[in-house]
Amino acid sequence: MSGEKWVLIVDDAAFMRSMLKKVIVGENGFRVLEAPDGAQALKLYQEYRPGLVLLDISMPGMNGIEVLKELKRRDPMAFVIMCSAIGQESMIREALDSGASDFIVKPFKPEQITAAVRRAFPSEKPAGAEGNK
Image 1: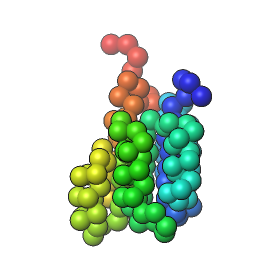
Image 2: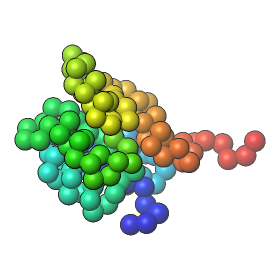
Image 3: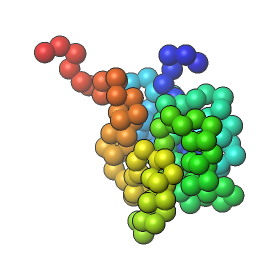
């Protein structure tokens, strides 16, 4: 697994995971892991240690805030970006206070996801970037 750049997408909605995956796979060599719930997310994080976690706030079972707190307890350096719907401002504030690196409000634009990936992997050049000056 070394050398591979993993992104973990955690959302109970399969269509949302699919949309996010389509955007991320287009980036330079990124590999995507998907989890439909918090328990699976924690298991995959432990196994793969992805460089970025895109985490939905509203999920059945463990909600995104609970997953975030557990991820940060296990790995204080985890780079987690929360995804939430408009109208969840108090949840966003709690997520940032709990260690989230950033948040994206749904519905989002593909460029927002691409920018989030670049923030998590700052040494990577965006697809199509010029190599020489």
